[in-house]
Length: 128
Image 1 (cartoon, rainbow, N blue to C red):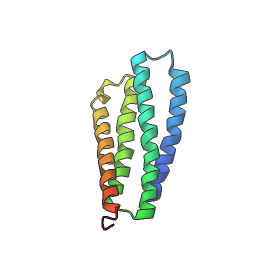
Image 2 (image 1 turned 45 degrees about the vertical axis):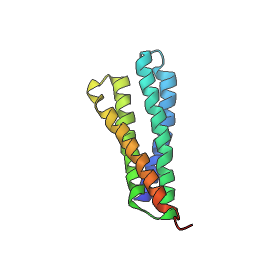
Image 3 (image 1 turned 45 degrees about the horizontal axis):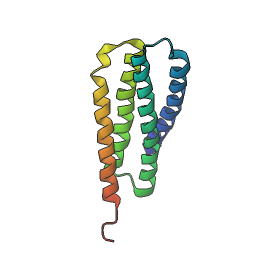
């Protein structure tokens, strides 16, 4: 499971690079400024959280696979799909029905960061 999450993060990071290049070259001039900005926001958040998923996997390998790490990795992964994916659909395809999905993805990112903080707190040696 840990390896699958780490591979997902790596593939997501690579696809963020591809999507960023696609947006900069193929979509520039074809989309409105607002749509292009939304697309770029999706790419930025995808890349940031894609890096986080394998790093959390490494924490699992070093510190043990604890529930907060899984919550973080899954929240980041689903957040990428919902937040960034909905922005891509809104920007490129004009699928307005995806609008309510974007905040759900953002909430998943927040849950992931809180879970990461909890996991780090629990892993600290509080006896020192």
